[in-house]
Image 1 (tube, one colour):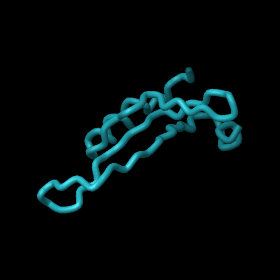
Image 2 (tube, rainbow, N blue to C red; image 1 turned 120 degrees about the vertical axis):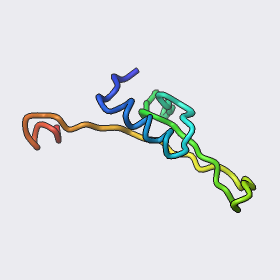
Image 3 (cartoon, one colour; image 1 turned 90 degrees about the vertical axis):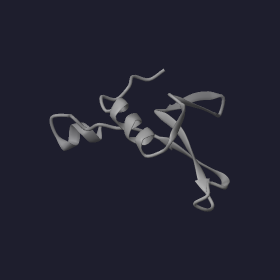
Image 4 (tube, rainbow, N blue to C red; image 1 turned 30 degrees about the vertical axis):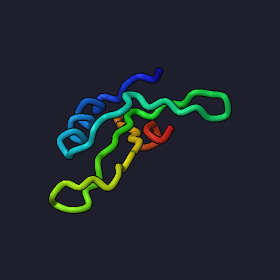
Length: 77
């Protein structure tokens, strides 16, 4: 499993505050017989009307990156 980014908890808290439910932390994806990981999986109910009639859900995968290297070139590596 990959290491967490220094902003992982802040991004997670911001998603929750915006109404998202964290479904995976991390989100594992199997591709070509290999495992890959995205930092967070989240979903939020889509509301059709103000009376809270649920229409479905929106699902997202969130990859968090921090560029804290000594230079732009280091960050791009």
